[in-house]
Structure formats: structure tokens, C-alpha cells
Amino acid sequence: MKLVFAPLAVDQLASLHAYIASASFESRADSYIERIVDRCNALRTFPLQGTPRDDLMEGLRTIGFERRATILFTVSKDTIVIEAVYYGGQNFESDFPA
Image (cartoon, rainbow, N blue to C red; front, side, top):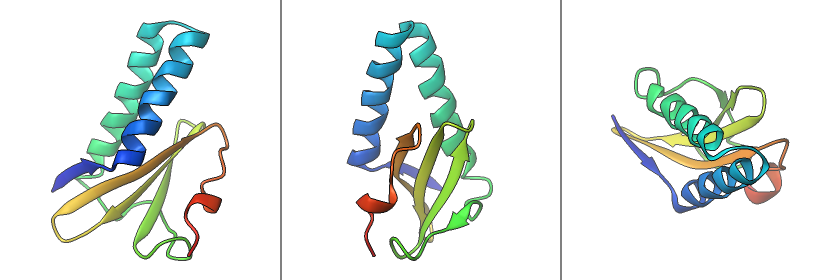
């Protein structure tokens, strides 16, 4: 399956990287973002995991990541789209009104 990061997710990962790098070290930020991307890539093996959130957007699913981030994604016939990545308890529900 093809994996695509939506513009919102790309922006969020860049912001998260900048936040972690400023609060800690660039290498720590690099490592964390790499682990998130690896987790997203793992969806190719079993794409229908996570919690369905059709109440927010048709076909939306969520998975937690290391108890600090939530990955939102959709799955079609041959593509997984990472719609967003929220960190530290950010309220994603208000950004995806049904």
C-alpha cells in the first residue's frame, strides 16, 4: 500500500520537531519524528488497526503513539493517508467536525 502524509500532518510533524529540538536536542527530535514515521509505515502491514472515528470524518481512524501522540489516518483501496498527528493531548476532535 502507498503511504501519503497530508499537508496538515507534514506541518504538524515539522512543528513538533521544532518544539522538541528547542526544548531538548535536535537528535532527540529527529529520533522521535523518525519513530512516528516508522509507526505510520507499519500501517501498511495492517492498515485497519486503531479506532474508527467516523463520527469525526468518514473513514477516519486513530492510533496512539508512545502515550503522547495520536495519529489520524484514512485507508482506501491502495493508499493510507496520514491526515494529522496530534501531540500532548491536543484536541483533534475540534479540528475534524463531522
